Image 1 (cartoon, rainbow, N blue to C red):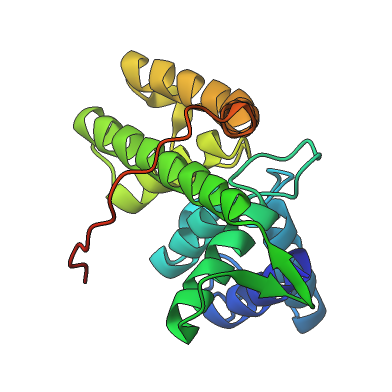
Image 2: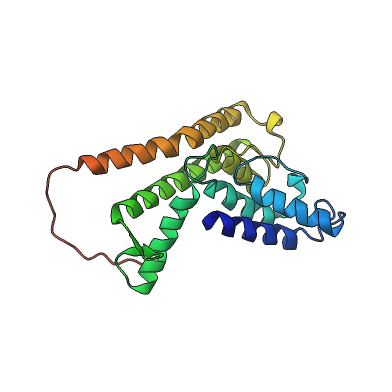
Length: 216
């Protein structure tokens, strides 16, 4: 369900935003525009191929592409990213908080709190890595920050697309991208297994006193 929604939303977004952009979809006939928008909606999350000039896209499209690359594909696939089910768990938790419920449920099934916490931890760690690497690259590359975020998300999601001259980047920036790609491919799986093992192992049956903390 999440995959279907992402494909549909991505297709409509790119078709609408890039429809009149003369350097991307603007010069194409309507059938080609539809096909190109559909292709990029899929490619940003898995394939890493492109049929239009990604560097010529609007900043809005680049940023939406960053979101798709960070979400990535589904579990047990060769795609990278946070994964569709992980981001769905986080969204379900947000909806539960808004509705004033303590547990997540969907389609008549309850999601274990431990699974939701694991999804939230993976998402936050993934986003922190994305932010740190983007900041580091911005210190060495004198290009628009949206292109740096695009490049970082592509590496972290192991997508393989770019909107800048990767070959002309600083040596340290290339090294950081290599490390980021390795983390993006191995990191989420390793992190998931480590968290699952730590939770299943349990620990001392100690519960500390509850305290109220003001948030928001």
